[in-house]
Length: 251
Image (cartoon, rainbow, N blue to C red; front, side, top):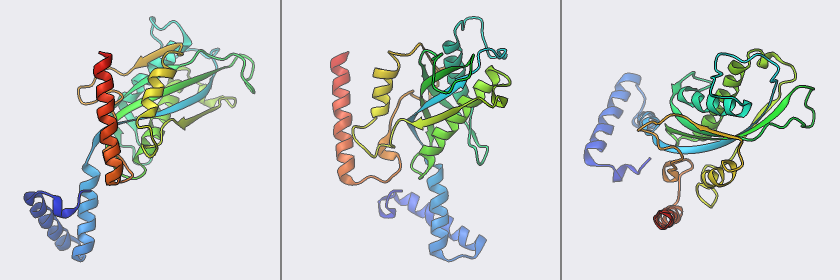
């Protein structure tokens, strides 16, 4: 959060009132009440940011398709791409069951029929998933949890597309993060690599429908955990200016 001294006067006054109310309500001292109020206020701050994961899963195409298969999705890869992208509309937090909306772009590679350890009749699918959401990204651990939520949604939709898949002992699946929370340079490298590497080589690409509140692929590292130094922010602003200039030349 911003230093208290830099907050507008009305915000400082509102904070003081909230602290006093917390002291009366709980009987704690001023310092403890201030920590409670600041934590509650900070958890409500949100920003639009993007993370990415790589999902690796085996699929049993011999299982009957579920109701999520549409007539205009003729291939296995297209089916997975469309359904996983659609699943981002309702992500669910594993611990709290909180539901929130996101947007995803999914790039599915061509299915591998020959893969180490695959049973007969199974295929291997590899997909990169870019997911954008409005969340309290500044909270430590939020970044990892959004990745987990998107992975859970991806696997859940596979189980709905192929009913019985989750009960198959041979089903193997895992996911890996494709970015590092902006702690390393270059910035937004997972977005760039997804668009320049994963999308062109994919057998099928799909994305969640438009949302005026979510710009798919948007990054806002300045407001994402961990807290950034002044030097880091200067580099971030310099990078943003370079990206803006590069886009202007490209268009």
